[in-house]
Image (cartoon, rainbow, N blue to C red; front, side, top):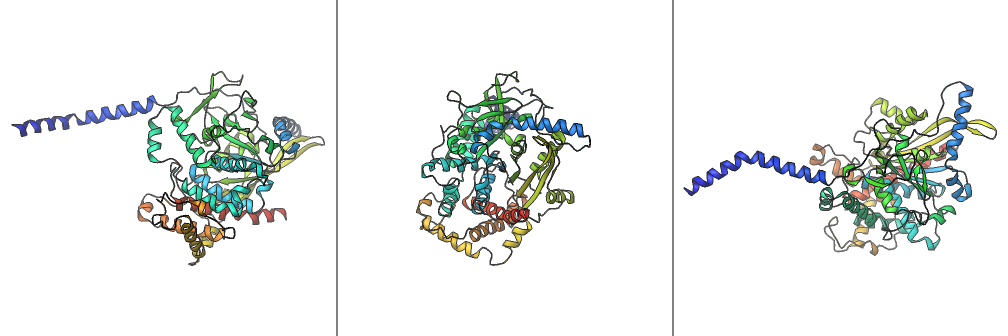
Length: 528
């Protein structure tokens, strides 16, 4: 009788199990939805960016030239602030891409530092993961500002860089799965706070939480550090101008020319890490962040902001609209088949909305051929013939673009092809591991791994070390049957992966260093 009763109960449970499953799923959905951010999409003013002109009507060209002069004048106060109004000749844009982008950009900027190029950079524009690295670079400088060393010294000098990579390896578990899951069900403000604290912990150099975005203004004004731009996106109604949606945070203001600028003062400042977190707020329904509306051009109490990559993932448009003469673009975007999504968006939007013709010949040819393997790490392009009115009349200005694309390109594969490529780097890596944790048998899991034990490594060959980092990790991942079945190939790590292993992080750092180092020949040839 007992067995029969138990069977009856089991049959009843099986009968109603679909109902129970549906009810559980419904409760789960309700829980998630109840913890989502509610916001109003904005109706934005028409964009007011510099325009190109491809026609032959001289009067129209003169009119556009005068309008472009006025559009550039909107940023005159920035130029006056930076190094007493010196001409802005070099800018750097760091793309979005989460932890992958931050790691790749760390290596790329080390290469720019070694080539002496970083010294020439006057503006750094960033999006999302590129902003993580920018935040790390600036807070590192802030922490050592009293030492009066050049910008980047404590981040990229040979006597600092290897140790810095080791510290970042320790922090590579940026958003552990348990913390990510908790944030997913948490209230929006708390989820945003969790995300922001993770950025501060991993990239803030222990000085970050209340650090105002104006903390380095005296150094920037003196030309000791580059001016920076943190790009975010306004949540706007469909059909709004693309450029109007791009909302900036800088040392002087928040906003854009379309909405006007809200300049910082003693009563109105903003935390640096908060701006970086907004720039990387990719998951809108959890991380979208609202700030009080300061603009008379918006009919709203708040301005809802999210990831800068929701509008332009390269961070290049902020430099283009300022008319920066030379722009280095570091594209660490996720493109499984080298689809160049970030480049396509930028190219299409500046052509359709601004009438500017953006051409990077090597990339355009690659896209047209629908190839699957890039031949080079770096490419040169341009935006030509932008009419600007000057004291002597209308002139046609060009913008040069130097484009670095994260990839296992042919030139990098050739570098890694010899059977002994990476052998010296392997010896160096083993030496580093031994110094940091001599008794460590579980390198990627060891909590005792201590970068402070690293000393006397100034002469370590970073090129050889990078070759080993990239070759060993890429061969393991790209030849692994499980990863192959899932279609994963290095360096195509999805941005959703916000927890790296130590060898994974160093592989991206190494790839960024090897590829950006290729820029030197392109810069030399451009000067000839």
